[in-house]
Image 1: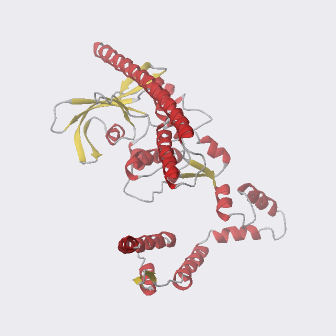
Image 2: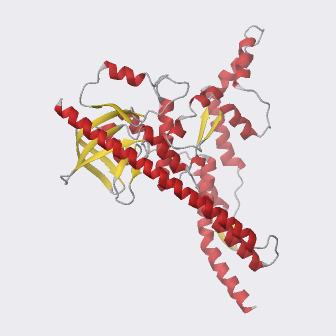
Image 3: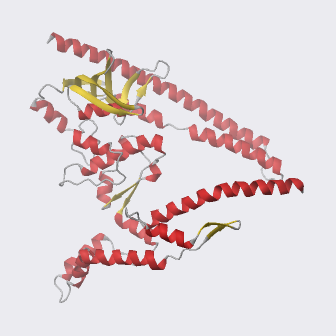
Length: 416
């Protein structure tokens, strides 16, 4: 009991210190935001007063462009996103912790896991690690004992000496428990009672080892997750999106590169709050019907899923009304897939007309070389992607020739 009280006192002190630091950061960021806003207004005013509004003079246009660049740079930094993240952390800064001793070192690190990173930039102290950070995988994948995680410079190994979970609400520590200790039914019921909602919630505090492996998978370009209804497939997919966008800081993956396709509007609304909770607010969502209509561009008649189901239900009572059902079954059959495969083969071998590619009188690739490269597709790359790769290869050959031609043109201009 004395050990528990001592641990509780230490946890209360750390929580109080963390919350105080968050409030301090919020105040600092708000002051910075006010200064940036004032600088932005001053720059726009200066631009309006000191540049001409309409000009055909080249030097004046350069002057205007310089001001515009300054304004755009300030607008890009004028962002309250970090403040919103900090405010979200005030109520519950973290949900877990593990103590880690890295191999070859004797110092024990206390790693607290939460929704976002929280670090003192002056001292370098990390109060809370983002649940998507590489070191956070230890919390989800290992119990007490040996553990390892990937780092940018290799694999780090060590030992986990403590693993603890917290229930924090309104900046108050409700309780904590070590994961090596059996959780009582009362605690489980208390945790689960807050998961019922009209909106899907994030599950960062309860991600299991197998789920974490799926979320952090970076070795496969395509990943298919199978499971029974209610097994958490959708939730894992959303958390994987949040992880990939976090990793995208290094791979240039942005939120506008991601689209979530839902079967209907109700489902889309149900999952709409998960990514904003995880700090990703600009990911596009679309239902399948709307996406098909957008791609088709109005070239075909509109029939939604609901309209199709209604037609199928009413067709049962009509003589010969099962023709529609037969066509649907046919389009889902192996035979129809074979027909599509033959069409793709014919299109690739007969309908795509390759031509010789020249640049400035120099042949870059013959049509036969292009066709052979296109048909040599043992790994089954989709046509569009394969053509895009060929285009990239051709452009890489053109760029050196462009530089040489530009150098010749510059010499001609200098002489004239």
